[in-house]
Length: 138
Image 1 (spheres, one colour):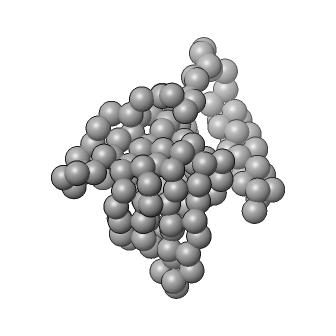
Image 2 (image 1 turned 180 degrees about the vertical axis):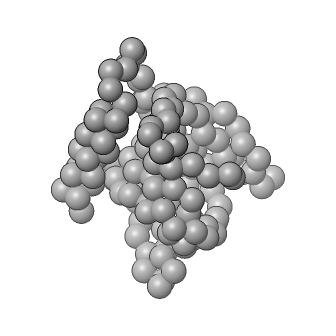
């Protein structure tokens, strides 16, 4: 699984470099990057911050940043973009439509494919570093 994630990360970087060309500055994204609060259920925290964003040919958007959430459950239908995830802190149980569940915690990496449906059950406040490919009106 880790080999697959490393391979996908390498492909994402190669894809980004081949399309984007020369960038003028390096964008630093780390575990201390603060998140901006988003609308959430009372008593929960949800936030994200993008520190790098670029639009490539064909209007493909690439965003890099952090996403953070408090405890709670979120049902997702037809996830609108592909997202590479590196868990920074906390834990989440992700359940596929077919009932298969995986628990992810700090240090774990995975990719959520565009069109994915399932349940995110945040077990303890979590923070993840993300690379999104595609855009959505959410």
